[in-house]
Structure formats: C-alpha cells, structure tokens
Image (cartoon, rainbow, N blue to C red; front, side, top):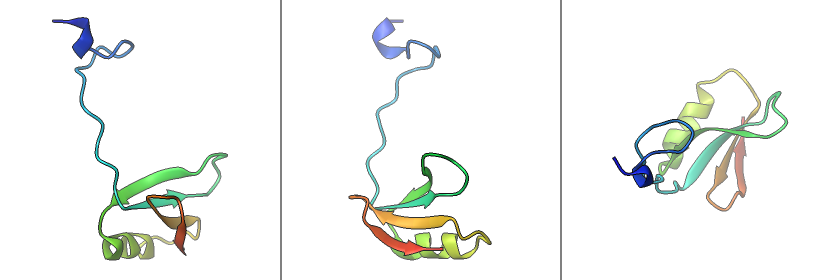
Length: 71
C-alpha cells in the first residue's frame, strides 16, 4: 500500500475531512479550550440536544463562530 494513503502516526487509511456544518455545540466547562461536542446543519436539533442536558456550560455557535444560544 502506498504511504500516501496511510496516516503517518496511526497506520490508518486516509479519509477526507468532513464538510463543515452550519452549527456547533460547544462545551465551555472545565477545559481551557472550548470543546466541540456536536455539529449539525439543523438548528432545532442543536437546541433540543442542548436542552436535554442539565449543564449550563453549552453554547451554540454558527459556522463563523458567532454565539447564537447558551445553556
């Protein structure tokens, strides 16, 4: 197999990057850097996902990083 199709460190087959989504749910809890928990193109789905969680450390941001909602 050609090394061009193998990730250098992990020995896994190469896969193309996923297409960017319209909305990201970001956890701003204890981490120093915000962590993306979920990405979706459906704002209603993102709001329902965030609403089903007990924590208040979640934010919904659009593809440009603009804050749309907080938990």
